[in-house]
Structures are given as structure tokens and as C-alpha cells.
Length: 338
Length: 106
Image 1 (cartoon, rainbow over the protein chains, first blue to last red):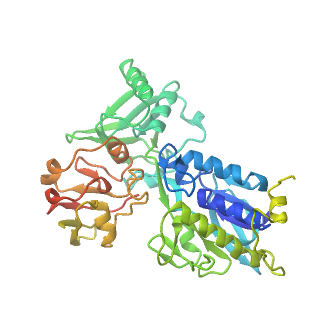
Image 2: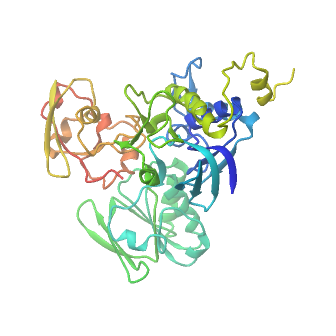
Image 3: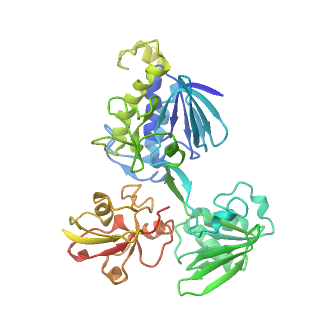
């Protein structure tokens, strides 16, 4: 059981800065994020794209912003729990008991949801029968590649993940790579490699085909694909892999009794608390009259939510307002030596 | 203003006036038309504003920029008439445009 003052859900810029604000006022926190790294949308969607509206930073990329925020919270030694999704919240007297998808548990005084537009989940096949085979012979990510040895694998997608896995698995498996068009979004060198392997007969490339159906008894046996011109092919397959990038979904947040309006959580603007006391929401995921989905607004919301958490974490103390420029306590927390 | 018609998957037809210069995605958001989520806010980074353009309009639309087709690879059931509505800027030429919104964007 991890015991800390505040659990932040989401390691995007808003969540990271909220951790800073908690640290400054002397509260501890830990951060859970479903992605494998901190940064949220900034890292997942636009690591290289420039941002021009961070106050006092004329231009930076999503990656630079994330790295700077991580540097800024370094003094607080915030513990990250990546590749995990918060599944369950339960009120336990005056505190919260939280469980993640990895079975990790937390005992916290308050929760700050900084979940952006939800957690990033793999985008799935639209064919209904795929659900039946998911996790058994159909996957959206690979955990153990040894199960594919000497098997026939049909990989769908045209991005880097699809290309890289097609190349890698073609060493030990019979690989079919199926993509909806001739062009690929993955790296040019990988596209060339895939085409070479196809020419050498080490991999079968099917372009302008999309999945129509999958069938099999307990495991997948065949996949039907359809060409743009209507031709249908049946491909024998032991496994099917789909790599269509990530999509954002609210997921379990919907079950926590919060007032949800158009995929966002309603909050007050005094301290960004939701209708459930002790649960706060900041950044893109919160809504209130006048809400702007800007990173700078998320910073402001995080600063106020952090102070809102104080009364739950330290019910017997009164929060003192101080500036980092002059506060001895804040500077000590920042590890500044004079 | 230009008239844009959105066919939603519940078989409803929404014809709305959209200000020129806005995108077909923004027209849907401003008028609360369901099915266009636009999670990334028009950054061509999420494919949740994917629409099917009525066939006879396909040639009249601006060409796809780099990246749109890559993003459509990620869309739910992409077809030949698939576009990202955040990339379609409303103009006089698009007055009367009709698009179908897929049954889901995920």
C-alpha cells in the first residue's frame, strides 16, 4: 500500500505542475499514468510540434516542455507509476483507497484527476468478432513475442509499430502485413525493408486490403480481407495483430460518481473540486464556465487544486500563503541551499 | 456562411450554417452535432473528427495535406471518401457539402 497525501491521475503538463504546487506547500504526491512515460498528449501526440503560448516561453516543443516540468519537480522526488490505469476509488473514512490496473493500491487524502481527454488505449478493429479473440489470438500490443515462433501472423497497420513488428517477426514466423493503402506512415527505411522482404518472399505484403472478418473455434484460424476493388481473400492465420495507434477514452473515470458533461468533469472554479469532495479535476478533463483548453489554464487550475487538497491532507493545519522568492519553507522543500 | 449537412449514425440529418473560414469539424462542435469528438482540437493528431464525404463532393475538396492520410490509417473504418473534418475549411465552394459521421470514432 502506497500512502501519500495526494494521488495525481495523469502525468501530462497539468498533472506535473500540480505536483510542483503540492510540493511547494509541503504535500506529498504520487502520479499514475497509463502511458509508459510522462508528458501526456505533449509527448504522445506532438513531441516535436512547437507550442507558442506557454507564458514566458516564446517557443518550445511538447518534449521540451515535459522535460522542463520534470526538472522543475525533481526536488520533490515524486514517484511515478507508469503503464497503469486507476481503476477503482473507494472512500475509506476520511481518506481514499485507490486501486490500479496493475493491482497497486494507494491510501490518499485527496485525488487530482489531470487525465486530459482520458487514458490512451489502443485503437481496435471495427470488426465485431475480434473481441472474442482479443487477448488469446488477437493482440494490440506484444508482451511475449516467443508465442509467435513458427506461427502465421497477420499484422494490420501502416505505422512504425506495424512495420517494425512485421520485420522483427518475419525472422521466426510467417508474416502477412495488411494495410489499407500503398502509402505507409512509418519510417521510410522500414517501408523499404518490408518491401525487400516481400520481394524475397520472406513476408507477404497486402496493400489496399482491409479486414472483413476473423473466424476460428477457440483461436483465430482465418482472416478475411477485402481489396479496394472488392476482391476478397482468405488468409490462414494463427494470430492477428492490430497497430492503429492510440485513442483517448475516459474509461473508469465514468464510474466514480462525478458529474460528467461531454467527456469532461464539472468542477468549481474556487479550487477545482468536483461534486465529490476530495476529488479534484484540472486541465483538459475539467469543465466550468469559460474553460479554455490551454496548458496555461491547466497550470492555474493545478495551483488552486493543490491548495484545495491541503485541508484534506492536513486538516488540523492552516495553509499559509507564501512566495517562493521569500519563503524559507518553500525554498527548503525545493532543496535550495544558501 | 455556407450550409453544411451532417448525417449522424442515428439517421438524423443536421443542416447548419457554418461561418466561412471555420472547419467542418468546428461547425459540428459549435452546433453540438454528435459523433465528432475532435480530441486533439484540430491538430491532425487523433482521427476522432473523421467523416465520410458524399461521393460527388470528393473532387471539389482541397487535397489532403501530408499527415492526413497517415492519420486516416488510424480512423475507425476508413474508406476512399474518408477525410478528417478538421482539415476541411468552409468556403463558398463547400456550400451544400454533405458528410456522414461514422457510427463511432474509436
